[in-house]
Image (tube, rainbow, N blue to C red; front, side, top):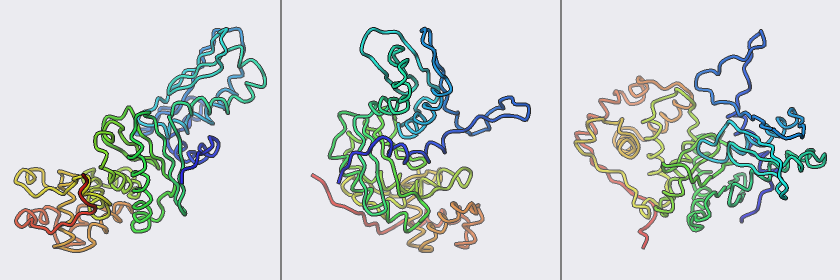
Length: 347
């Protein structure tokens, strides 16, 4: 069942995501601003450009900005601008306020009225919300999904199937692999993102260009949902391992890999050049071979080690008796597997 979600409730749900991406100003003991630490995201900032005769309480403007924009940006999508300019303009029109990523524009005659300025936060929320075609929320049991659509031409059938896949797969992944994973997830159809999809925090971005062109590839939700469940943090392991596990889980738990014509490619000599570091489906097939031929559950144990930050190259020897290179060499000599895929052919 779809329900429209109110903006205040929506922003409350996003506060965790916004907080994780907002870095407070670092100051030294002398009161001077220190440099941002390496790998920290830039803070959200607002610059007020006011050439009108109307004087503004800049502290209150900043308060309204911090209460609304970071949460909006955390949900909005791919590389939403963190540096925002607020322009105050004189106009005889009935214009009040508009807001988009990186820019806020307000009518000086409108904002100088006390009742409007006192409601700046609510008005800014509403203006930011207009950047999205729709915001829907679905809740089933302990799990909630907020679906932000930014593309007027996004196929509603795809939207429905992505939502159904989330509620089918994600609770299973959480209960099976990491019960500390959030139960509140945001989907965003991103018009600017040029890839396929990506996950961070509690949000998954979907390229509307890709999804409209590949409407059956709904198990992107399974792959990206596993990234949310993985929750390894920085420096816990190599990217190929993270992506290989996510595709391994897609194979195991995907709901319609046949319908999307997704498969684990047969081993080739070319794969042997980069071995397991090929990542994604090539690595996932290797992991399925380990699961079938070496030790069932070994890859799931690797997943736990990564999350606990106890993984290293010796982990493979400890769990299987062989290095990962030795395992790959065995795989290359005899890569045959029996594979079973979920779903069915689509017309």
